[in-house]
Amino acid sequence: MTAQIIDGKALAEELRQSFKARVEALAAKGHRPGLVVILVGADPASEVYVRNKVNGCLAIGMHSEKITYEATVDQETVLNKIAELNADPNIHGILVQLPLPKHFDEEKVLEAIAAEKDVDGFHAENVGALAQGNPRFIPCTPYGVMKMFEKGGVDLNGQEAVVIGRSNIVGKPMALLLINAGATVTVCNSRTRDLKFHTRRADILVAAIGKPKFVTADMVKPGAVVIDVGINRLPDGKLCGDVDFEGCKETAGQITPVPGGVGPMTITMLLANTIEAAERKAGL
Image (cartoon, rainbow, N blue to C red):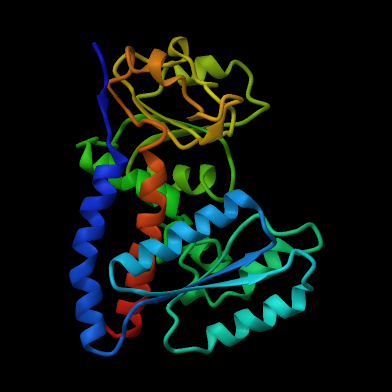
């Protein structure tokens, strides 16, 4: 049996179309949603991500701008800009593209963003709200994955879920969302003993480790829902995920491809968070 493909690209487009009406309604009341993305340095991958975020906003009628600094900029300059944006009533979302240069205190920069404008969901207040089961802003990639479960008709209640990876950006918030949805969750990492033991019993398997084709068919429970968060570039220039897609699609019940799976959903949910921030500010 070949797995059903969860098409993130199609779902992202469907959601973005639905966002347009919300943006128009806000703009009509003088609250056009506004997102600012701060990029420090000239990392090629980060530049692509930032461009896609800005273009995604503009395509649905939102206001968006990019602020770029040299990699050598001092942290205080960036913190001052964040303070200025925090005070700007026309800006509803502020995002600092990670990673930052080594001389930056990443945590300090993220905490400088006003919690109500933290559309990445990385501020300690927002992380705490998510942990309590009352999220205000959900980190964009796990948020996108939850929407994919919804689209695929996946009932998470009572399911065995395994997350490979414990990052603050994906692994931890993903685990919290699954817990909040009623799943029994195991979080695995590089020190996990007998990883296959855990993955083979997973009804829901989320891979977010950054190792190309790491999850193979023998690690997957027949009929499982496999979510591939990874995006890796192979020596031949082709993109692949953390899951061996060709092998695993013959075992899984549902699976996400790379590209065209989780990736398009991440930016889409950033747009959703920014619109939600604007709606809250407008009292809607």
